[in-house]
Length: 329
Image (cartoon, rainbow, N blue to C red; front, side, top):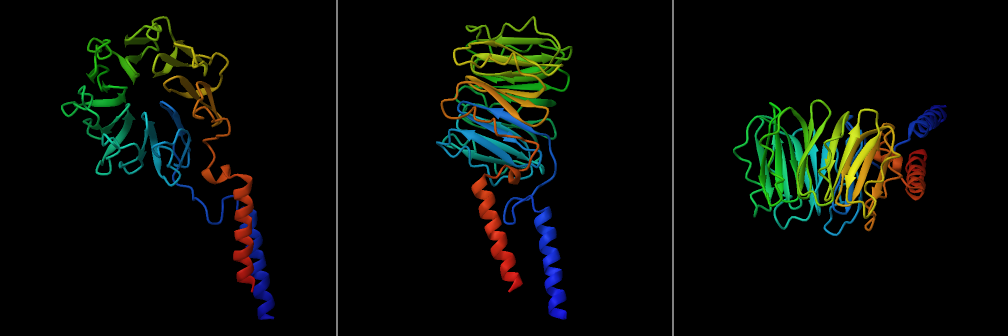
């Protein structure tokens, strides 16, 4: 009788586990909820799921997509060949090219925001100061004197900081005037592109300086903007109603965003644009030479486990069968 009762108990336990077992038995576990985010770069794209894990597509030449083990991430940023993730505890993860020490962030603590340039990485500290490392030939890492910074954005060869009072500072390459932001006031957000810088004003209007060969700085007519993103030669703006505007070089189609709706976040890569929709899905337009726009299968409100392939799910069920079969014996 005792054996029969034990088997019944095990059977009941098995049924409950299988009924609730949407996540793999030997897979990832969910971490604290966070806000979904996206980041586009030269040839790879990264998405932050609400469970704190990270998805990535595109070129992996330097291992910049090797983020599957990351967890408890609250923000992501991507450079030309590296990827950086900010953890909930204020420390930072980084993978990819490190020939300029752009990934040497393991000692950073008390970080509240991260941004990556072509070959440099910038971190905003809790006290409003800024850390930076990586390629510094143009002085883009010379931020040690900055204080009362509220946000940072790293461009190709320059770095921009938004101060708590709405003013803006910048260092680095200024060959096209991309660092001429000292006169800006009432700024709510900044984005540094390849050779230009974009600022979102508190009234929803936009300002821009720097290279304007492709008209990427012609944003003075934009209104009702809630977020901005600067790419290589294009600029993207997210409107209050969830639609998107874009201007600049459209040779590869990064401006083809007029049909997008229900967008809550945007990111501009070199020659492509990525948008996060309110339902957690992701859209992309522009160059896709390395698969950087292959995001149609993403849903960043779902856990990594829920995005398992059919083969992975079958293998998981085999493991379940073996595991519970062994218990039964």
